Amino acid sequence: MDGTPIFGELRDLFDKAPGRFHTPARSGADPRIAAGNADRPPAKIVIAGGRGVGKTTFVGSVSETAPVTVEAATNLGRITLQRDLVLYLLGTSEPSQAAFAGALGAVVLVDPRRVEDAFATITYFERSAVPFIAAVNVFDGEVVHELDELREALALGPDVPLTPCDARDPESAAQTLRELVSYTMNVSGSDHSSPPEIPA
Ligand SMILES: Nc1nc2c(ncn2[C@@H]2O[C@H](COP(=O)(O)OP(=O)(O)O)[C@@H](O)[C@H]2O)c(=O)[nH]1
Ligand SMILES: [Mg+2]
Image (cartoon, rainbow, N blue to C red):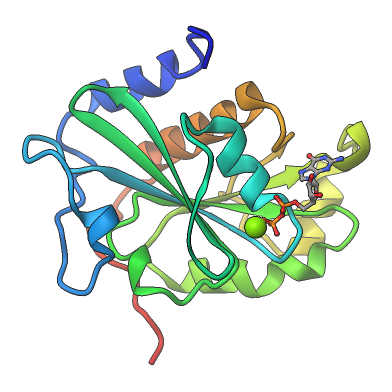
């Protein structure tokens, strides 16, 4: 990322809680995600939301490699925070995936012009053990002036962070990841090491 220290704060967050985000390999998990350094297994963040909301753009802008398409409409990106700490981003519009097991959190991207596209994804994560935040992808450079209205339209719980983001901008995407990681550390009483319940 051109030497830009955009991941500095993210790195610091992980360092504040060593061991907190281990994502042990689970049977059935995608081996490309489950495989990793034995010292610190890779952490996984899901970038979710409806079609065309900017998931691939987000994963691509903040990852050190071009997103890899692992199956239809699912992209994988990678951020090496430290030599032994790799963060995988899984961009997908299909929420009910076994690959979500062990994810440390999810960013649900929202297109402010069609918020209803995010309903199913938000409901999915509300019912799962995966903590999530919502990020409004600011299309057309328009500042999201009515975050409160959007929160209401999305029926977001009062404690779920809602943040504007520009998926095309690495700094903005990295900031969104920082907010998610910071939020997962502050959610009290939840066990983030549990996989989400995958509906049959
Ligand atoms: N103007 C603008 N266009 C965006 C932004 N994010 C994504 N796009 C465009 O929206 C389209 C859909 O984005 P994509 O990342 O493929 O969405 P996905 O289906 O969720 O993976 C693409 O043409 C992107 O270039 C954004 O923040 N602003
Ligand atoms: Mg895509």
